[in-house]
Image (cartoon, rainbow, N blue to C red; front, side, top):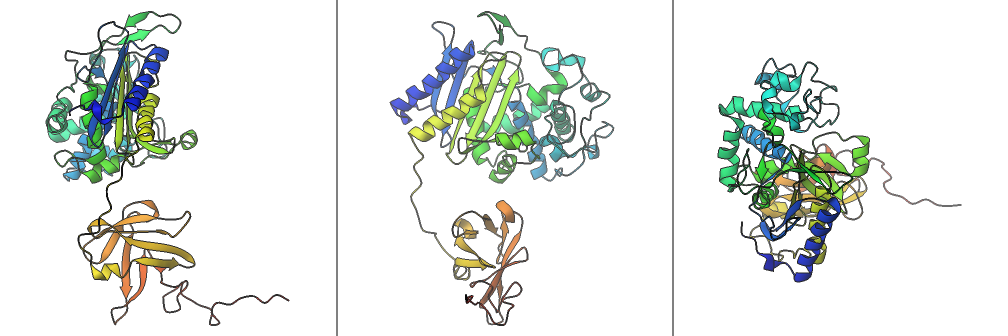
Length: 463
């Protein structure tokens, strides 16, 4: 990916630099590096450091912690797309005798498998992975903390199991599969399981004094699929672009959309905070934007990757300190700064290249009872249905090729929409999951809920 800083206005670039400079200074980070992606390309790169005459660039590696989980989730979704597994399958089907086999693959991806947040002591992030050579060492004697599927409870051991699943079904180490199936196709040549020069050193900054302590860079062993990777802002910019659009060589646009879709029941505080979790991706509603991505931390490092699909933008922020700067907040601010200063210019309106007359006649207003909705034609034979004004149920639908459509989102996701025709070929009504939509409110000629009172519509005479 080529970084073209000239694509942003000077005032925007200065605002971005000011934001990371403030974060590095106030967060007391030895260094911080960031990138902004727009339209799938890196358009700004910035860095701040405490070392005079030296600044990290987009090729310097930092440890990215739990952003590793998103990479592992991609590997699992690839297996699903190939038909090797189903996300509803219990883990026991592929990894028997773990003691947690009733958890499904989807539940492990969404952190709803009921497993503990961490492996048994000693602290896995700051001790050698050799201390936990087997899955039993990662899970411990009491791996469950909650009933399976009932609540979202972030679990690092859960992603260790997913990594072991990948190894079992691919017949190769997780790291080897990741490189072959994701890193190489996407051109992520500076992403690796162990640090490669040039890379930043990890530091702990004393909370009450401006002094530092070097952090060990442990090999996490079995826990690697949960947090092992090192990467750069250059590579993560490419990875963010992939997570937004998909790539046929790795994972389709539909599957990365599935990763970005909430899959876990949020806790009450998460509802209040506007946060959710998909399949290996965090989701947050912040400042009027839906941001997806993942945070990461390991002793000595902090990482944040956020994507705004609506703005066609992403950002990555990396720092080499154990705590301090709120990198996800900074990453979200970088997206906001560019989106507000230089709003996305919409693509020109263009008419459809072709249209089916039998579909065109369905366009326009329809009524579910007395609720007015409009059906509109979209690209590739699809349609959308939503209220004429105000709030209410709205969904887009893809064409099935047989005169029916399947809901893609909203209340009608997965539901079938079809036009019911009379013997003479004219349209009687739309059937959407048993709901009847008619051209007139409670049309007398349509099935229930058609007009049922023989006196029809009436007013009320007041005395």
